[in-house]
Image (cartoon, rainbow, N blue to C red; front, side):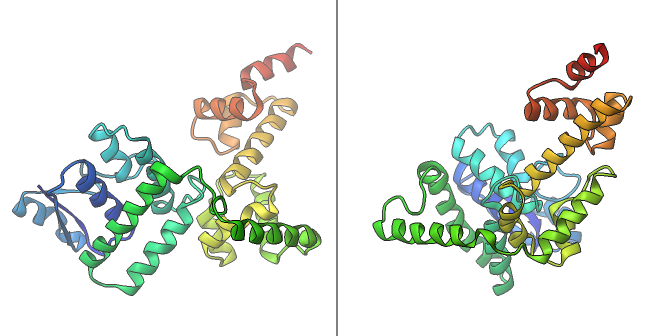
Length: 280
């Protein structure tokens, strides 16, 4: 079967062909054309369009096309679910989905910068995703230093250096970001990693990697969720807002999502907490 999508692939439009050829259709043929020509060419070539708006194989909510292919074709391999989180994070600039997402985005951005040949990028990408699949199947629990005494020694030296450098000055970007997050406490707290990187003029991959060093050893996403839940708890304890209003004020899309996140973080349902405070 022929599959067709937009030209200049980087992440999802290379990950999807790899997934299709390895697990859905080994004889699949992939075509890259300018965005405006995809649907016309799809009809003429009897090809399945993917990774563009208003077609079946596309993004749904916070899921990317790679996720949809897994669901649509009933793929159950746990390694594919691990890869899906990485692809989703890299493709949507949500590096908090998986720590490897920033690296994957950096690799394919660099490859796309070096090559203007879409099928050359696809060929290189197939090798990279084969390697990622092997990691996700056999090595995802293994640390880089596990097998090598030399690596263990280097890691020991690194941690000794970190202990000596604990008193190092917090970089200016971290101080500025703390102020930005504090400002968000008075709003709906919708600051994203991409928005922060643009405001700070810092590469999002670098920001994602360095963030935890200065923010309680948490990823950007976890830190923001923690701040939102703490604000929500404060509003429950000190205001008369309804839970729906509190969900809105802390940036949650609906009360159900807010309730799940609050209980996951605090161990208690927000409605139970509110009732217990009302009885006092």
